[in-house]
Image (tube, rainbow, N blue to C red; front, top):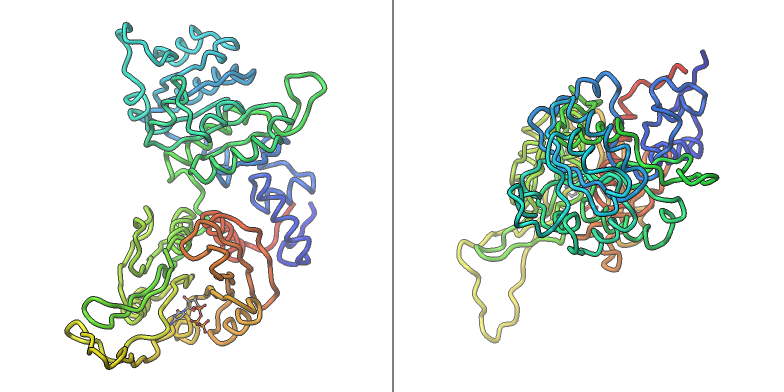
Length: 473
Ligand code: CTP
């Protein structure tokens, strides 16, 4: 049995391993084991290119995934992989789920509605106008009465329809009308998957919040063809459904850890109607709090005034000013992890006027006397209850790395996530972020990602930080 220490790998190797693991939907440990020829925890030898439901659950958790009373609308698209749906339906029903099947016309060329209906124990829906049918319940009810919509196989055509917002058959109409989460299992020829149009559609669907499982790589039904495009196996789809519908079935690598996250701007009052603020939306901080919660940490989110909803998992404390935020953070101590994402206003008005300040005609603008706010990150960095992993952000418009390195030192943080917030980048308030992770051991450049993916990757780094360093392989 060989042994390697991931932390001791040089930065380039570690980065390559991390990227490969992320691309294949595995943890770094799983990927390392696979590379070293050990496949204990790795299903088959297939690689996924766009698996969004991470990490995979272990077999014993999967076997006990309880989907009792969960209602799944399964849209079967027209591809050769449609035959796998029979097995998928059987496995979902074994776990207690109720399956309502919907087949496109093309799907019925690959597998008969009769077999699907028999295995699902329900009528197969396929026509958009079926008013004569006593079972007809209409596309709105079909789309709303499910807890989850699964599209398997999701063909290139169905994905294009979804990305464009078409509603020209029952499947696409239901997908447009739904307010429920949607999971798709793409299946197509590798050339179709790689086509720029499909790749564009993937990006659109991703940013619309559609969840993906697979596709995998491997042999295609067409002889001699291989590559990305094989539909995920039924048990992989069951695993992804478990993640979405029964979040508690997810592994909780940060279970037992307590985390504090700050998010959003602060508002510093000038008078009863005016305040000093900034453009922070809270999207990045909220996504990090949510991701930490999903990984099992007990999370306290201290949020400044934002317009986005509170995340599902963490407890959220709402504050207005920097001083209120500092108080809430200190009250939440002790913690193992603190991620200070808030764009705290550096200054506040010395005297908050009790009444609205009036213009004094002809005398020009009145001046504002400012005083510095407490630096919450710096306070934590030097606190007697300093969290063992203290992470700050550095919002810069120039000399990103230099300023971030200085903040790392000055505030006694362990890591700084540095981001360029120049207006042309659209980071403040936008969906995307391009960051660098700066620590005492170096600088990691991350590619441009949406804020949810930045949060996931940061949480993966946090998990790695707290995980056992030596892998036995
Ligand atoms: N921060 C904080 N309290 C403050 C100011 C900043 O906790 N009063 C934290 C932020 O949450 C972030 C980090 O410090 O994690 C850096 O914030 P940033 O606004 O980039 O830097 P500042 O310290 O405000 O410095 P400058 O405005 O000079 O860039």
